[in-house]
Image (tube, rainbow, N blue to C red; front, side, top):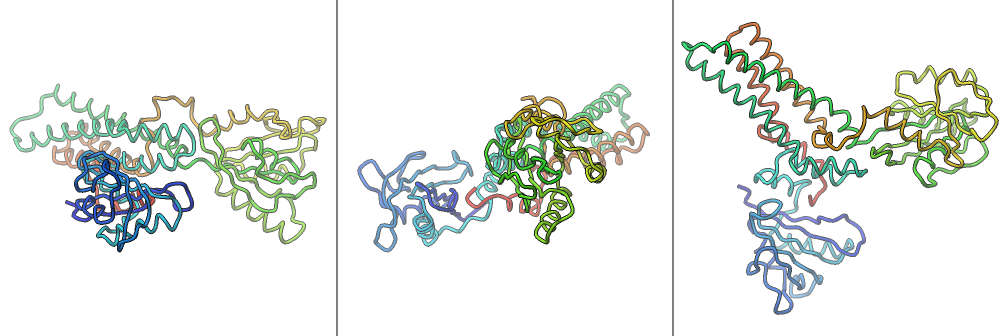
Length: 452
């Protein structure tokens, strides 16, 4: 049981029309009652108010009004945390919201830790661990597709599949353990074949989930794409076209971009972090040299390279050097400035664009999506987009299940088969939080914002 009451500002800090201070815990109503002075016959003290009602009044401290507010009362268990919850909507701004928060803290609440409201929702059985992680994914979603995937997970679609997998493994494990307890009874051949088929189907399902890890990572974190090329090839103009607005300065003279510029764009539903880099050449001065050094750093961290070449210039030995230098990364070659007479003779296939008027930009976006995403983006893929933590747990589950199947085929002892199968079941349970440690929970919820 959680016996204290927490409070935090649940809206972004800074100036705004409104801010929300959230309280959750066994004393939430009593603490709010100490601070809230209802106004009008329709408003009531939080301790007397019916659940899911809204009340108008003032937050007061030491006999003076701190702010005019609306106070929402939500009684357990029909709340996000399954605890008594109060949400105070006050005027936005650093001073007003902090004053209201300090008032409720002085009345007996404790400052919430990052992600503590969601952690309580998990500990109280309101959501499982995958749904808790989906809360963070919803907040940080940068495209409609990422938001749709997060909402599918928040709705429990992934949890349902994981729980079905765990149930299958636990039922099979129970079957083997029953025969361990009664060693005089051998497993019938047809029963053994059914158990083997069941485990093979579970292994195939784990492989299907693991195959979504890359797409899940892209939707959550995005993919970094470095735009490289010689000075004045049109890199900054291309960045502006991909973003749909002017982000980088564009000038006719070469070497305008001296530093890297990063900006995220929605490319066919995928968040892509484009990095405009300084032109690759021998530096003319110290500032340009530093810009080129940073360009190489950014290219090293990028997962995709857009190599821009000027269609009106010849392909040089320097271009060939960069063609070979970055051959270990996914790349798209772009012949820009196709509005000019074509001189470039590129030894590889390339996409033709004119970054001044947008010619070729839409097909380029399709090419970016096709290069980083395997196949079409379908709605039925979204519920099973696993993250890095899920992937690590499922890999351990796969190893345990593979060992268990190998032992089964080799007619090893049932104890050995059961041991590996239990390892697999426990690893699957970690995904939804059926088997978890304090350190794991700390690691997950510490990444949340305070107030969520």
